[in-house]
Length: 153
Image 1 (cartoon, rainbow, N blue to C red):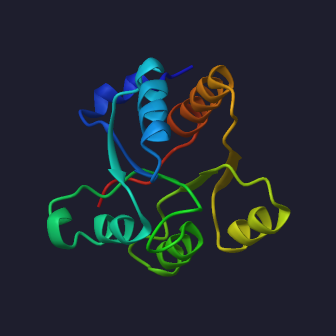
Image 2: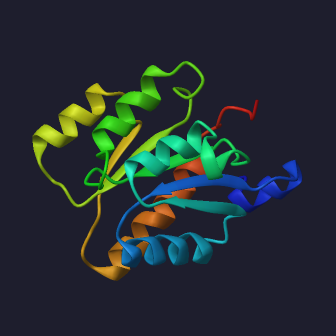
């Protein structure tokens, strides 16, 4: 089976936009992905406004790469994750980017609403650190080893 680290043959890392306002969750996510040995670049947006500026290459993000994958928290300051997801998925230049909702919410209405907004996956963050690392490894295995992502434009 081809490993995510085989992406090195493509001479570019996988660009991940992590949209997360909790510094502890940012650190954990980065560490878990680093432990998974994925050749990646992780960019962080701390709120929904920053996330949209990043994907639209606005302001200080004018040179930002188009992410291969977005990990999106729902409960964000300034503009919540549901609004960010809706804007990304209605934009023809952005809608092809896979968006994985990574949130603490277990509410059925959040799950249904985000899938209705065309989220590609919904993951509830576990409180247990080991379980969080396991989930990040599974995420890495699925999105970077099994799934074929769209090419960069």
